[in-house]
Amino acid sequence: MQLGDLLVSIAVTGLVLGGACLLLQQGEQAYAIGAARVETQQGVRLALERLAAEIRGAGYTPGSAAFPALGVAEPTRLTIQHDLDGDGAIDRRGEQITWLLRGSTLRRDAGGGAQPVLEGVRVLRFTYLDAAGQFTTSPEAVRSVVISLAAVSRYARAPAASRVTTTVTTEVRLRNR
Image (cartoon, rainbow, N blue to C red; front, side):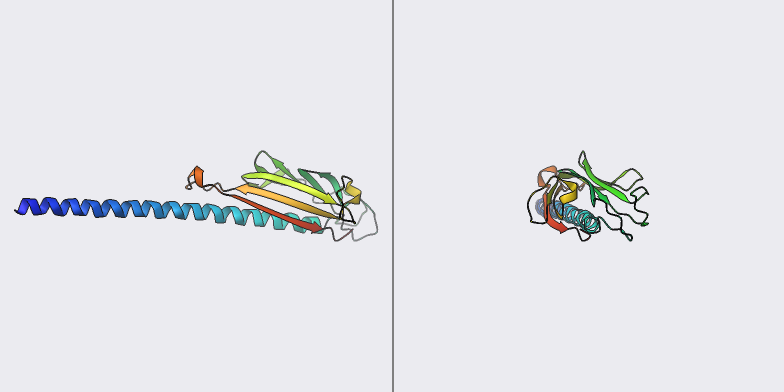
């Protein structure tokens, strides 16, 4: 009778421990998915905030020199120009900043090479609007830029099937034009 009781208690304990392990595994997976979403959302917000701030300041000059605020205005590449020293020329490091998508990495080049800003980017699209709010392809006519940025979560512990894409779109007005 004692051996039978022992076998029953071992079987019940095994079932309880198996259920607890399954519950812990699902909790860890839910945490990994949530962490991946948060990481991606924070990265997209940070990149968009920095990009928007630089677009707002495009065309800045402490002097009276006139130059285009944007050097390049392409759908997937944007070059912002500032005359930081007021000499009337865009020739120093940091006076011309290029944002572009290379592979799945959003990069920013301020004269020291294209540094990575955000990984896992699926979409980077710039749309340029003139003073009347109409689409334009001329860098000189641009008064605002619509930025669309989409990135996929790349948290290492999250399963590939649970990766979520975060998409953000905003319109930024050039203050100096």
